[in-house]
Length: 222
Image 1 (cartoon, helix red, strand yellow):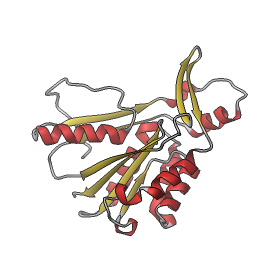
Image 2 (spheres, helix red, strand yellow; image 1 turned 30 degrees about the vertical axis):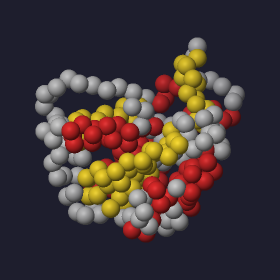
Image 3 (cartoon, rainbow, N blue to C red; image 1 turned 90 degrees about the vertical axis):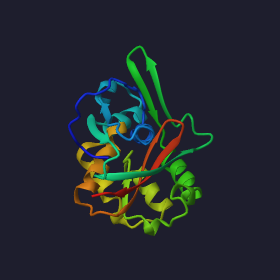
Image 4 (cartoon, rainbow, N blue to C red; image 1 turned 180 degrees about the horizontal axis):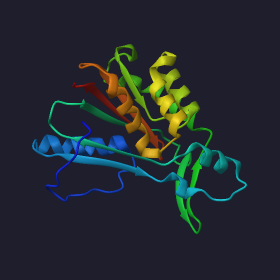
């Protein structure tokens, strides 16, 4: 995966992947099937379009958390940036109402429950071995976690028993830009790769409606 300009060769497009890591998984499948392929992944989020006048406190807090963002990356078979190793989706049963998007007369209506961090902690803590493919959290050098909010990052930190410094890139992206939905984890990955040396192991994850955690293991390729 690398940032680059792309000369147009094909016009095959897939829209609405909802999650950056899910899009990277599809891009990796394409490149593994067609080694000469160059797949452009674009995450464009205009979260401020959802702003509406409301007296619902949960909705007001959601509006304050989100911001607009755009990220682009190129997935190829070339040995640059990061090597995408494996992907896993962790679906949390009984949580479908914790994050919802509904189209109503005034536009998108989002619900982001305060129960999300606890649900994320329970799921990640129970399935950490599966997510890390049997490795220990201490063996992961880079953590690119979607900063859905401060309490979400706190839940991930506790679930994997990480040091406070492990999620510093995620916390900094949240502080500077807010939650930009699918684009946010790409900002975190870009920040980590900017100063990373070759051969470091990494774990990326993002969260969305379902409740589902999409996770990815990767290595810095130089």
